[in-house]
Image 1 (cartoon, rainbow, N blue to C red):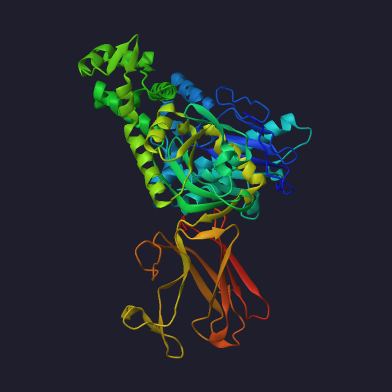
Image 2: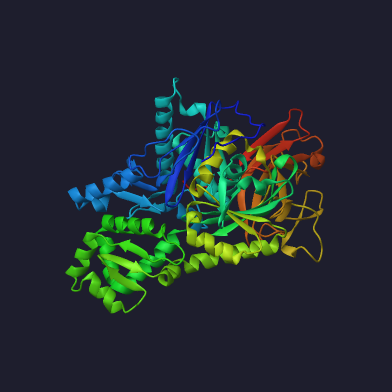
Length: 597
């Protein structure tokens, strides 16, 4: 890969180094960049089971997102080592499968569960459950310790976690609760703390990828020719960036403006259409061939072998190419298990009577037509969504593909066929775009000039009651007998509004009663654009703060201000008493997880 070139506006004075952690559904990794030499990046090596690193500007990959915990919940191992250790534990003691906790693909829990709380659980292979915050914190701590160890081995100074700016990536389509879980997991892992929140940046994955594409001289493959990705960053250009990973697809649309700053044209969208859903289709094919009951028993009785089986398919599906057959190796243990039930694997495949599914030299051979069926549903979802965005946002010139699943030739071909009106660019080293871009973003986040908010935000207040519009049961009288409407929502920003980096929106309010010595301020969010009341469907309370107003002179004319700071991935709310002798200010982090522990 070519050397990465950073913007001249780079400001790295606030931290000795930046360490970015990218926890993916199937693969994860981290990248390190010193402020003194920010374009020299180190990451975990994808193909080395010992997770050795290649030092230099070109990261070479990731390791599996697999976590093994001991029966008491103590961390044991992660990545390739976790799978190996899990197999060894069960080989030595079959009962270990009931007590040891092996987690994989747990990231999808943060996408699939809408009612997130601090109690939300990840489920291990054996059914045991553990807090998702704890599971993610184990992974972050592993990467934190490993990264600091690596840095100290190669540098001449002792580096501690406090010396680093930590960056954790999240899908843009995640809700605010999922992002909060990642921040709390990072605190638990020791990356930062509530007292030092500035040590941690939560970065949207497609934005990190956009930074990677902008600041690198990476050559992109465009059909049969090669093209420098920087052509998509010419002033005035509009591009769609699709981060297509193992679990989810994140889609964002940007325009390139003044000084090459990027503005978001449409709030992030996407869905659960990643590579693991091809695995699901393959599992269903096996169930049709060998029977649902038989496959469920195999998975239950030989969990490690099943994991290895699907790992072999993962390797095979990466080689899938237009017009070519796909050969999937069948583990020896699988052959033995199937035969012990009466018929051999070859007999089952023969009885399946499908000319596109054959048994060849101990492997499952699929014709290209059958391979297409495995990918079909995912491909349809991805291309239909991209087409819908292109219809909503006009004059998009390029579609840039990043993410692990985006490396698949079949997917690239299908997108090019469906989106013939735009030029589709598939970045080389697709799977590294996010983690590498996240490091560069940590050094210089200024490339992203604005983004679109995903929700409407506001606070509850009591304005004048409007006869004939406001419900009668919402009418209340203040201490002067004036009619006010409770449950009204004062909107600060509406869904899909554009907000600048660090933009502040301020609204003024007055106390409900003249002698109030404090005011409760409740913050709400909604997926609807213009909710009128906090009781409207889809409106949820996300934070509450109490602002002291001890000086009651001025009665109800005392003014207070509520400020919401937008433009970052996370939103901050500040309230201020403007009339007190001593200015009183309160800041609150929005809470999207309730108050359960």
